[in-house]
Amino acid sequence: MKKVKILAAMMATILIASSLTGCKNSSGTTESQKGTDETATTQSNAVSISGDKTTTKTVKMGDKDVEVEVTDIGKSGTFTYWSAYTGDSAVWEQKRVDAFNEAYAELGIQCELQFVPDGAGINNGKLLSSIAGGTAPDLIVSDNPTSCYQYVAEGSFMALDAVLDEIGLDVSSFYEGCKDVMYYDGSCYLIPQDTNVIMLYYNPEIAKECGLDPENPPKTIEELDEWSDAMTVQSDDGSYSRLGIVPWLDSGNEAFIVPYLFGADPYDKETGMINLTSGEMLNYMEWIQSYARKYDPEKINAFTSGLGQMFSPDHPFMTGKVGMTITGNWFSEALREYAPDVPYEVCAVPVPEGGRANSTTFGTNVFAIPSGTDAGKAEFAALFIKFAEQGSINEDNFAQWRSIPVIDAAFDDVSLTKEGDEMYALERQIANSPENGIPALCSVSAELSNQFVALRQNLIYNPDSDAKAQLQTLQNQMQATMDAK
Image (cartoon, rainbow, N blue to C red; front, top):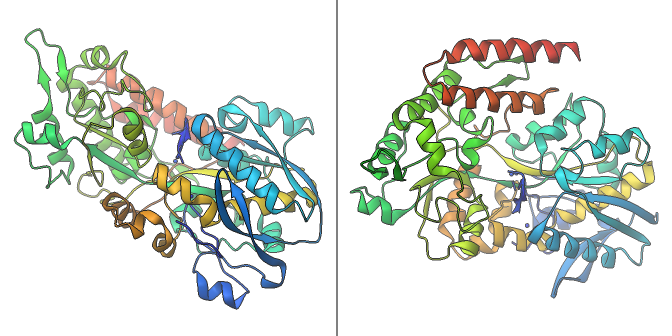
């Protein structure tokens, strides 16, 4: 999901989706689980469950009947749940919680849902204050996995290994790239709800108009630059009526998505060192600055100011103001909703030599249980996580937002796969790259990302300034901050 900045029906088994995100507003994961039940094992490679504790029920999810698995842990009670979702995603969330409450009514377990904006209180300090004051919820789902990881490093979330064992949810087979955000110091703290794939969207009609072959999209940075030049239309007064691509638009505006695809590793977990001055990172910054020098950042800013955001009919891709943009699978839903007549195609994000070709960062919404949560309520919360990972619950999310399962085998049970959807097949191909991951996860993740974006903005508006020197200064500063924790 992605509509919060910003799940394919497996009826008797559990799927996991990792990423950014159908839930928008946070702008977005990986693999699966084991089982002790022989039947479950033969039905799916995704998750396994204890057969003697699990039954199947049919419940309502909105106006649909869905078959779900219910696990009896021999306890009853209520738990509180903060959800970051807004808009359409909040409607979907309410249906999910209502289905859970119906499924677990006979066992006396109920979820009390509260919608809490700004990443379930992650972004505005509300969650941290509630944890400190002893009034924290028992479970959250947030669209800000980077900040959640920093909360983990600071001791704000509880390790989940024991409680996952207790309720029979095995997450060992998630995509390795998703495990970047799941594990800290060898323990599991965060569970991806879903994941997303970052791609290059391009308008095939604009490509044809410019003499380009839409059946042969760019694969390298050099080819992307050539496409951008061909698509750009400049007026006599120097202003633009169309740009090929704005590298810092949409997912390009995120701190480390494109740098990671260029091959950069902003933080090395093995050495515990921040690395902003690698050749790959400098290559990325030179690419950014080359666009600023070529097109003039002031003119680009004048061109893009006033244009709509991702979920707006005024988004520059929807209005033909840009011919290409780097963003996630959720953008297909934005196009369907706001610009159904605008044609589009997708391909893997082009990268330079030495980059992570045909790969993606995993954008995901994550579940977490705050530190200090009562042991019993933590089990109820974990039951909800397990419930939420089921394919029957996730099908609408997959179908609408094109979010993806966190294990390859689960794709076979998604309706889009069964229907032969070409874009979803490409997502599956990209999702299986061994180079996928979630970059820059450390104890200063949020601050590092914010500082990096500010530095990049300065370099865009001062394209002849020394990027390496500024990156070195920020690297030293953030390393010192991290070492002091």
